[in-house]
Image (tube, rainbow, N blue to C red; front, top):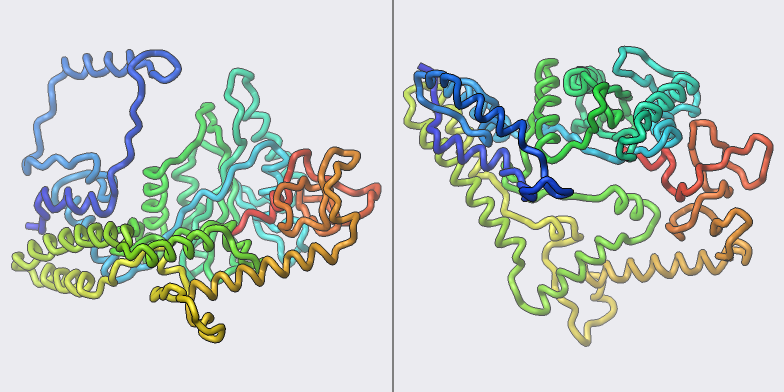
Length: 472
């Protein structure tokens, strides 16, 4: 007889590997905030008249929360999948990543996204195959333009439809040293299965240390339904993508960060871009200020307390599984229990996200009378010094620009201009200046003149909103 975890242990594991979904309260009326439920009530009344199926022999009926991370089926099948998930987590199997990176509004924006992920216009040696949901491979900009136009026409075919984004872009990635071809084949198989009723395009990128696939999906499917994934959908996509990788011999796991006993390190793409430009993002300043306030007040960090409680729940849940495995007479179950025991023994101390991303966790508040030579030893003072130095460099660069570039008066097109689109003024509109390299429509050219073949960015497009802003 196969090993079975107790129903209480499975419920606890479901709380760790699939946190409860956030429910939104809705009004009971049929107004703007309410919903029509006549069909649901009729279906409930009809189902109550039918004979109920006999319960399974084991008598175990998994809850919806258990089915989310471990699937349905018999008690033994669910237990086996739960044990495999825990074992992969304990062995440190690479975790897949599925993330929504943005939305495209209009055919021109969709075409710019396709041009970027396929590297259109970068030369034949650097261009990447753009795979479509129809099984074709696009390398011509005219074909991409026709496909983007089809998506836009389908989005706005009915005037009664709510106007919104035309497409949604996602990234599916794996850690470094993963077979890129396997990642691409798994991503295409996942897209064909998950988005069988939608049009999509995908391209593999290996320009970074980790292989990743850019996937752009049309917002409306062939039946006119919109695509708006939530947290539960992303978890299900991760699980499917990980399964496709395992089917191709690539070890992959799809579990929440809390199941590994650590805090997620969420780093916005905009913050990384700002650091690459030599500036200090606001999120770093906020982290330093928060650490300073906590040390000056002498209060304990509430984030550390919350993380310690959450990790205690994870440890207790794994320990319950270990106790049940050790009670089994199977040698395989004993080995699994030993693996899980080593995992919880080596689980790191809970460290909040903002502390882990600082230069040094041991933050000593600055004191009066400290010598200038000792300021660099304090990470808070060092961060503030870097911020001041960066602001000085930006001010010096702006002061050295000609007056015509520093002018903020509206031009004849009604747009404000600065000396380039390098992030000095994030609110300026892109007018085709020399430093703005927009890939709009895949055919834009950079230059400061008004040549005959000059392509201008769409009206309202801001600096940095070109295809180059979609990164893996």
